[in-house]
Image 1: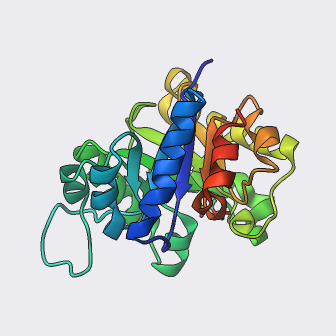
Image 2 (image 1 turned 60 degrees about the vertical axis):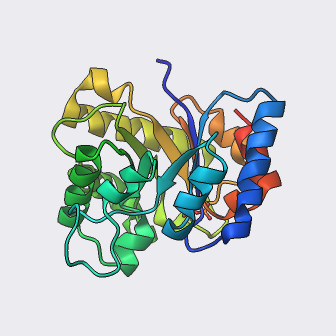
Length: 245
Ligand code: PEP
């Protein structure tokens, strides 16, 4: 089954106006190498999105969060409607840092996913177990999958499997484990939305992907791309990652 591949940069709370230089160097590299093996999506902080979209429109952009309502008295929040209005196409929902530090519950995440889809944003939905949950990994992942709506497709949902213990730590599951976990995630998705759609859903791996391990990870048949944090802030590293399919 041929699925769309994605290389996604999650800049977290990093970057400034000047970082448009990094984006421009990605685009230059992509053009030079006639690169098209994966779709590249950059998710900078909210403050940079609008500027980047104007200054370098030859790339896709995503936000790192959205509110579940379209507007209202919610100081400090940004809605999916607002993101859509500036030309943003994707939004990350359910990142473990937001689950942990903003105490986002599965109900919150369901509402955010609904808001994004209602506003025609595509959702990059993150799931993953904590270190102490490794033994019950699949029940954790299944629980997280329940936040997805009952109907969706490969055109509007991308799954990112990100073991929490691998994010920013330099640790990853073994290559064989990554493939097996992705296959099991696809089976869990299949129970929810059926085999035909689940076979088409892109499931990305995230957690300490870098230019040294990307070829091994991205060559796995069940891995449809990478969600990259730290290594996406350095243009050389990120270019090497999207070059390694
Ligand atoms: C992330 O935050 O989504 C992530 C994968 O981070 P890192 O690549 O730094 O582990």
